[in-house]
Length: 237
Image (cartoon, rainbow, N blue to C red; front, side, top):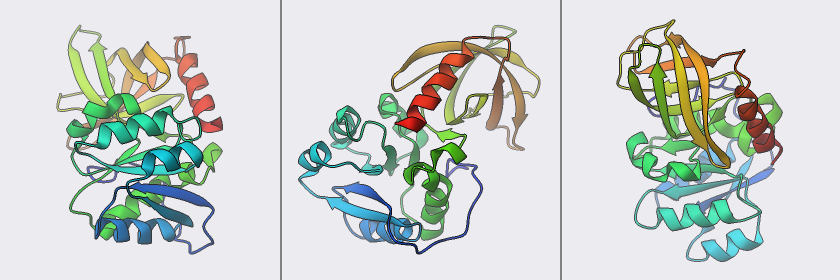
């Protein structure tokens, strides 16, 4: 989880003809070659946008974009998300940590490739997110999305967390706080075009280390339907 930020099933690798394109924005070797090789195995073509990213993103549609975290990352993400053709493209960050990605949380980063790039880890992440990239989205009920999450537990304890995946029924999260299964409270977050929302929830699972856990939205809380509507629109986009 620390490197892949995903929990999806892992289908068999494929060398089928490319049916989607991913933009590698100002990417240098050896990262460019590693990413291109790994995407290719899942039928995804890599296109290098080197110095002409703004113009290409304005004119062409890409199923995904990979942006290196750094001084130029904000401008690239801003334009990708504001481009009508690419506003809902899968957005990968290269380098940094989940904490670094929080600075760009409003752009809805879906997943992070950690440096130094290791081919097995890159393949694992591409494999876990390929259905979003290939637009087989209805089969992918969980959307990887890294953003800030605030939890207020039933005992009024406030917990800061980071999202990993979101679905219409709940979320998987990461936090340094000690979270116990069965605890209830209210979760607050925003996702791209979804303004901040508050929904009652309960903790349904956590991993052995305690840093990763899952919450389920309260079925009696009608505010959760706004999340389902947002997910449906995201998948249809």
